[in-house]
Image (cartoon, rainbow, N blue to C red; front, side, top):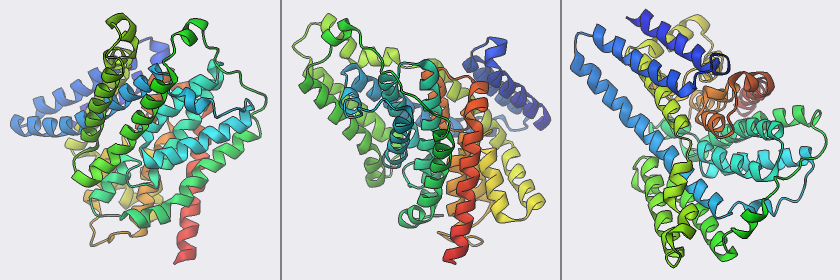
Length: 426
């Protein structure tokens, strides 16, 4: 049973990676893989009720991520429909490709720590679309945004779901994880930026705005109000979670509801035809649904692997085969670029007790760094990468060729810096 599920997962993963060659949408491959893994599991199980309970438990976690993604995408679409990103893009005057790359990278890095890496990726890729006309340049910037957003989210307890898991689980505290992981995460971003700065030359051409679009732009008062409301709504999500201890998607849903009311009130005097493209209904239609379904399939597949205990045994194998705790964590981080980092961290929390590694032990801080940034090595290794893949239609092998080596160098450099920092501080 386990061997068959593993084979199905590998075949599904290959189909997703080879989407460009087999001409089948990755969402279809992911959905089939996810359902087949659970089908094989339940048909081979002695207790079908237990399998159904496990599936519903995983579905709850998956639904939280999907609703979070749905809400974030809708709010971003609303801001974009009201030309809200024009407020930021107008402040960025440079067309120098190298300078713009550094500005976008640092914006994504620090914004990710305040919001989260997924929302930041959506916002920054939408913004870069306003600043860059060339598709090839946009793809490259999107890849760098993924690296920057994941690096920025790793050092903040609300910036990445895995860091949040460790925070909620009592393995880390907010102040100490920032203190320990901030500089390694910054190194993780700086190394790719420095490597690319030596090659990136020339200027970018801003995306041309159609005269009809200019005429149809929302009034500046509406644009500013929606922009401010949208950013405040996104910033409200981590605060809501901290205050109520409810999952992040609950904060995102209430933020979406408030934005819905705000936009309805702004346009209450317009007829339906005029306000159609400025409504939440229209924003929901523009969301990339196949990407959400792809995410659903991937997480269901990984949930099946976790339920049969394969991930836990894989982590145990790493512990026995490698021995050195730093190499184990680095390996788990690299593994998170292939398999979702959430179950890997969950498995690690189950394998290593607080008695073995107390709260704020460097092992947990290193885990936060590696699982937060390791996913950047492959496009499907993080929620930020999956979102970028859907928004800009990035192909798996394009990312592997253009971005993966940069992400890997940054990841290893940051890991090395963390180990050095630990030796010096100790």
